[in-house]
Image (cartoon, rainbow, N blue to C red; front, side, top):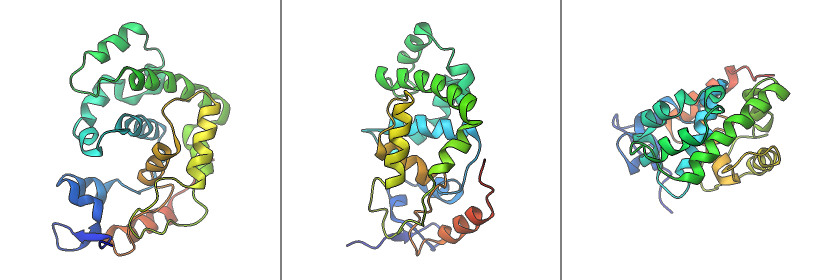
Length: 203
């Protein structure tokens, strides 16, 4: 079994998945696993994870600014107002992933996010109810779902969301800090633990 870490640019260990692309180190060190309570960032990550399905995160990360420009900065109030004309415009946008089902899912999910905020107070308050009860093993990010991601996926689908399967939702939870899945030897794991300890869970 390969070691769960690799040396980073500074020689210190990072999660092995950073080896896939040089730009992953900055994303790993500054974003991945740190807790997020901002509704727009949470919505953006759910959308980007749905676009990643069947593709690589490197592809999506490289296009992230294009996605932000195309989808009004992932302001779900604005995206919820998109209609057929906007969907066709997005299908012609070479800067993003031109997949009709995923584009239409983002527009649909924006409307569902608006409904969820009305019902629950915020997207953050809703998703953080599904925080993992214990820390992930972190050995090598060996699992692709969790009981919490299965439950959250099921509830999203019940509320009419699309492209939010358990694997997509687990990747979202890993990235947004609902679980610390950094390898135990990774230098960032302790930073994420401290950030999660200081984080005020939205209510």
